[in-house]
Image 1 (tube, one colour):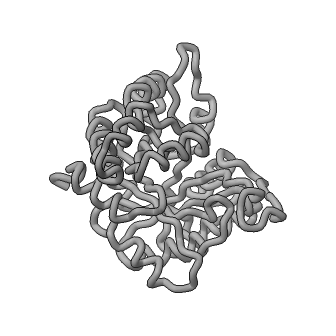
Image 2: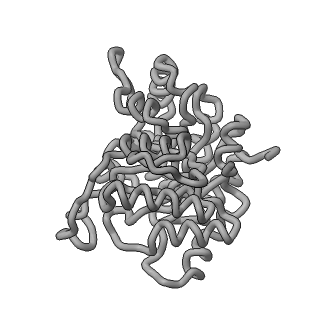
Length: 301
């Protein structure tokens, strides 16, 4: 059983982070990037060509991190794989000891390095989770062939928190839970009040009992970064109150970290929140490490 799975099962407030592998064949560059997170997080997401930009493969990077003492969450996109490749990758990753998998659609290649790249999308994220669950629980691939031994997978999906309307129903999350998802990592949350209403709505549908919710947070480096996020990241809203607070700070980067610490501390008190997923603009790993230490979120762990 992965450390991430055990931590969530124990009811501990869970902390994950995210790393973008370098465009490099050097393990040293990847490990130096991850080093500030060692011993501070329960697992680290390894992105799969985020933004449709080429990097070291997520499987290779995840394996290197695991051997370095940093448990990975492998991000797997549907964008560039058909089901045969997906099934083989799930088995191969498990053979390497990589059991945590976050299934994503993947960014549109037209926005990345090579816009002429073909889009596969043989399965959507829900379909991948359903097949992965069958492979884990039944020890079979969809054709009926046996897997011996079956991969021990801990399956995650993504979501964007919203301020739900009275008649809102989380159709997509219900379908992903039915498919077999074990945990959810969300897009950035910079406003806890609507997040509380989102979690209350999810609890009303029984989803917080079926999946662990890790809420996306991050230290904002500057007002410019906050504005960019509002304009470019779907589902993300940095409130005016935070932008004004950054504008009035002598050190915007330090203030952004303080704001992130406060949000994490508030999220610890929100029913249904199992932990946080910390992402940082420009991959500021030292900033993530400082936020975790200052928040006291791992006290007593």
